[in-house]
Length: 350
Ligand code: AMP
Ligand code: MG
Image (tube, rainbow, N blue to C red; front, side):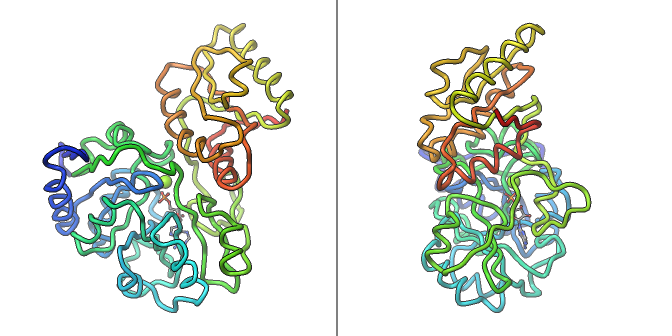
């Protein structure tokens, strides 16, 4: 492992050379963090077990949690997956490149460390041009989970990657803040009906319109011991800052009152409280620190802001973070609530 991490920034003179350098490093079995349209990924050659092992080590990721493999062509898809069902092809036609991961039967060339020992592999063709260039120039499929320490909020800027992984990885390609801000939708295509294992920007409605039927296979909380996980990631704590997080859901008025109560209780105890708030709720509530999620009815804005906000508040010396659950739950709102509920230590239904 290198002690120094190279950073190349989009817009700087050496960025083109930086992508080439990063592609060489992927080919040589090293690790590269790169932007995608969802969040930053930490990549290595998906077919090189030793290289993929470095990702698990840098993140502190449990070995049975498989990685999504990023590809830049349909040919790469056929190299890695067999029996690609007709519905999967339809979804690829409509949503690739884009924030949709498809779980397919894996070919034997995909090492166990990449699939977490499963006989399936998660594939995605990202849309971000830097990600696509890195895959093309390295001529390798790139296994890449989010580029954060396992369990912490996902990285939506290169700065977040530096905070978590500086010195533990070889290169960071800084392409600015990511567009969507939440990880891809994960859909299991190995059964009769597609099953959503993780919600994202591509919604259940989008998938149903494309292939006729879809089931929800995820829960908005970490699974308890003994519960069967359809996706290994469901067993682990996710997205969580070190500071305690309370999410307050319910009708607008009730949530506002509950937030005020929690804040005033904390202040009586001499504790500092930070709020992750919609603009509408923030008009009424005061606290030591506020991070805005945008307007209540624009969940796409919240999607871009929640990880940034959780990280920001986690760094401002607070005793508690309170999250405003009055956001719209439609569309990508479902994915926003999935992440917020998993990040929360406690959920109050006001
Ligand atoms: P991350 O890339 O860290 O955001 O995590 C990738 C997510 O996809 C995790 O929740 C994994 O458990 C899930 N995943 C990846 N590959 C598979 C697979 N073959 N079967 C089921 N879930 C998968
Ligand atoms: Mg992750």
